[in-house]
Length: 627
Image 1 (tube, rainbow, N blue to C red):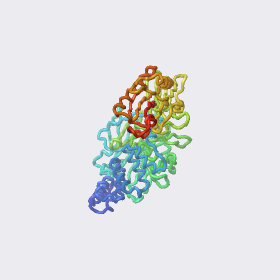
Image 2 (spheres, rainbow, N blue to C red):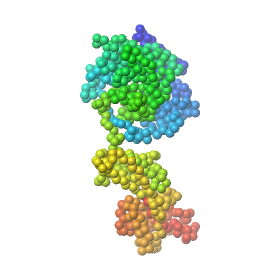
Image 3 (tube, helix red, strand yellow):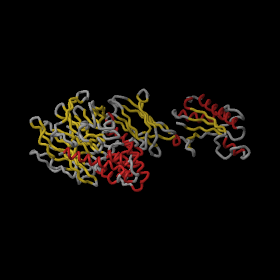
Image 4 (tube, rainbow, N blue to C red):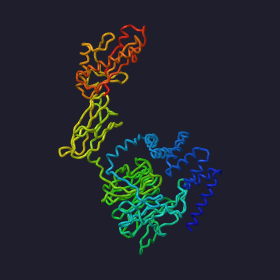
């Protein structure tokens, strides 16, 4: 009977596909039935109205065809931007993350959330907050095809869902075979062996996935998709139920849906608490926050169930929260695209505090990627676990090991500010040195002017803040027995202009050292005694600030041949630098350049149009601070 029903559905979809040149209404029926792969092909043949572009983009989006979705959403927004519903801003933002266009994604998510988003800054912040680092590796999995949702099954086995059975009907959503549940042994080197499907009592002609087992191995909870479709939000949906099965004499039997499931909404992704008295799951039932929410329900001693409870707004958003897992330490892990992340579903963790779960923390890379990452499970005592991801283009199983994130222990961080204005010094360079003055790390601070460096125990360090036209600041610190594990060092820089009366910024933003005019004999470039006295002021300033670098430039007026003036200015600038070096300033801190008559300060750009005094203004030497 079930095969007949699915053959009938397949025939219906096949019949609808013939309507490629027929009405849009028939193609929309495919879309409503979530036959997204078929619908996308047909929408591509139609006039690109707003409805067609919206459904076409969504069809690609729901199948994680991000490049095609990006192209189609972009066309949608360029053509119909003033009339697009707000939810499309969220989906397009997710798609842009999916193709790693994070700054562009922020523009659309800013509008959706009504507040500024900064995804790249969020990635940097994760280094401070995620408690572990991970090493991720795909499992060796013969005949792998759309595999996900690995769970622990007894002492030495695992279970997972797979679309590898080509004898199953094709799922219209993505044209891949319907999912079955399999069990296998997993070797120490991460290879799945003895992969075997569960019996026909578990696997049917529809989807089965996400199995979880009691510790004694005698009870299984798993997903199964309904054969009956119901209408929800203008779409015809085959909802998902959680089923329970019992192991009797080595065979799975008594397969029944849980009493709080329904044909009108989905319940999915079962997970057991450590004491096995609570079942966690995801559902889109009425009364939630939107999309899929996480729930829990008590399992009574007599085998009955309590009333499902929503986990609340700390965990749930108006989007998808799915794939819960409760670790042996009562940590909740789950997947979400509603909390800030890398794109698609990301894995989060939330600690249990006074019987409530605290604010979720994104696990960061490499667990999470720009596409869907989900179904995270872990054995915390050995710091090993498994996660599913479609980052390679299809669902695949990955194993991982984890270590405590050293950034949450040994680190130096801080902010760079201006000493006098107290403003953040965006663009400042912060450098970390060891006790031999070797550069270990450096960073140019962003809009929040903060820096963070990973450091190690029992070491001595120096952190330096520098910025163009500012006096560098060095701060030494230690992580040895006399020092601290964590350091917060504010780097307060003073500009040369604030520190020295002779230093000023001109209209072009150049920072110049103002000296008395340097005079040269006619057609000469030798440094005269009066010029040397003036240059000694510059020498004193440069010796006071050993990191200061200066450009010495010489300028002429517009009288005389162009090339003559250029060559003369070059000789005079070089002669000036030679004198400064002779007074003990390192040559690598100086640069000479002659501009001739190319940079006048007034309108005297040729001979015969100005007075001698006006021409004289352009005959000058300048001393610009480079660093």
